[in-house]
Image (cartoon, rainbow, N blue to C red; front, side, top):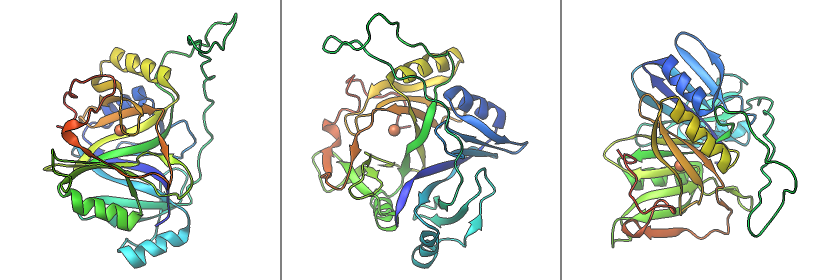
Length: 309
Ligand SMILES: [Fe+2]
């Protein structure tokens, strides 16, 4: 299945307004709202990437953008997807829905009209000891406020059966394992995978999906690309000032190498900003690591608090 990118995530939430307020403070932009739902986008040109309907706390599913309408028909014929339907969300388009072995709903979407991207803040021109780039000029300043976000980049999933789930994402969606982790001293027992979208020679993020063996099936986190480190640091301070609860960060992952900053939304789902991710293509050789020997934060040896609840 030729997947182009991760497209969206869908939730049910008990307090729509509180969750939407958190998401706006985090940096997402409201494009549609009513008494029983809201739809949000990043400033990077997507029509939408995050939606919630009123209901009990829950993760309703995710969606990938495919290359052509015929990929939707292929998903019906070969993978048991639902019939093609028109999307009512901003930008229109078509969708089918797959159900994976753990009952998770995974949309495939096509033909959604994007929105106009927001203007990017001027790039920082840094003066480091080895490289001076700014002479006689102050650093450009950015307005205080939520982060400017550019796209939904990846998400993490707790799964009850790692092996079956990983095989499903590989065989049905063609995702590739960039790095995986196994239980201590037993390379045959894999429990974590970072999976990327397969676009052959073209460069893609180190992972679009992160799978972790658990006793439940649920979303672990969703992650949006911010402009740079400064944007993340400023967003961190902004979210603190608004009284939201940090989960982990700011730090840098050794696998994928992105700088991360993770926050709890009102229902304790994790929202992450990331920058400076590794890019891989078909030349990448899959890494397999012992989980007990692996630091998760290149900037600290402290284990992450409340990250795997
Ligand atoms: Fe992440």
